Amino acid sequence: MDENLTKQEEIEKEEKMRAEARAKVEKEIKEKEEKKKVKQAVTGGLIFLGIVILIIAITSIGGDGEKTTPQVIQYITEIGTPERKVEAKVIEILNEKTNMGEKRMKEIAIENNEIWISYVADENLTPNMTRGGIWTDIKELLQGLPAVLSPQTNSIVFVSHLKLVDQYGNESIDKVMMMRMTKDTWEKINWDSFIRDNFPNIADHYWEHPVLKK
Image (tube, rainbow, N blue to C red):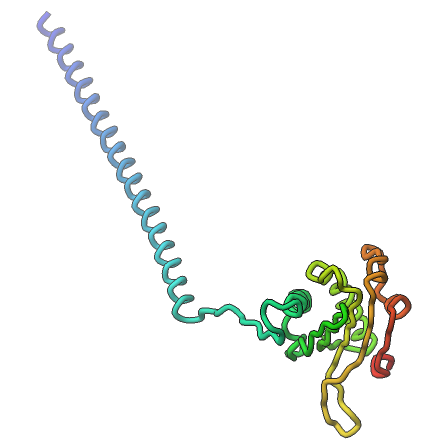
């Protein structure tokens, strides 16, 4: 009886030791997992902090270094006038400068309900392409300008200029095209299907420099 009791005690003792060992291992595993979570959280926090610092640094450099100032448009018309509205719309559509860096606007004049828009056009690879580009510009202007025109406006005259070189090699900004369109004419146009090459045929007045016909 005593011998059996002793064996039972040994078994219980071994089971207790196993249970303690198992509990110890589980505790160590749990502690490792908690440390891992803490480490991940710290790492994530450091990464986030690093990103924030980087953004601040970039912003600071942009503010103190290569800060770009808003472009100030040099208008040729007086503020608050009908001419200024027209000029602003032309610049909005065609930009303030040409593709060669020339100042776009030359003159805006309104007289007897007729608007004269004198400007420098963009250059292109060939005379034919340049002429087509001018027609495209006028098409876009005729679509955009009516929104800022007085209801009394009855016609627009577009005077397009380009830099030309004479036989002596002298450069000058000269007139290369003039087109007059009355309100009655442009209101007939279906812009969705209109072909720009028809401008010479439908314009109320059309002239182009021989340089565009080469």
